[in-house]
Length: 190
Picture 1 (cartoon, rainbow, N blue to C red):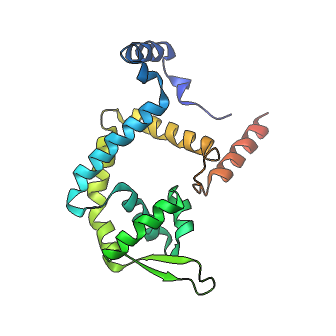
Picture 2: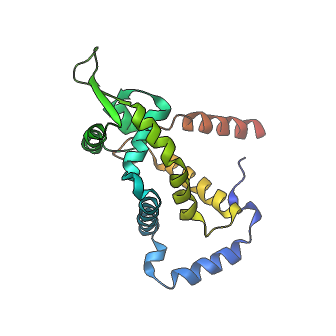
């Protein structure tokens, strides 16, 4: 059976602090509000740290997906970063105009537009890496190192558990293997 993050904490003190903080605003009892607010905060920090590059978080996600996975069609790229196809279709021309990606038609299917990171795009991703890392660190810097790990783990678990309940697909390459491994180890433990 999988350990949970609550196995080694004082749940009563957590519940007391949670109740105290939620009493300050009814919005603090709404996960959706808190997720949206954290997204706003992170976007601000990202823009602040990366302003010299004039790249949005969505553009950076697309660039880094192309860097790690190589050339792919726009629909596949949308799935890799969990964006609507129409959003990707709007962003790619801007990146192309800046010389960061190149677009071609697939030879095997003329309806498909293939996207590839250019050398300039690769250089930009490398140049931005430290600034982007600072934005990520600043987003969760008010948590202890252990709390950061727990927070990240909980977010990953929620994304994996709810990924199928969404109109915008996001490819989780290892989630099925992870679920299979967990169910096999639970079956073996009984």
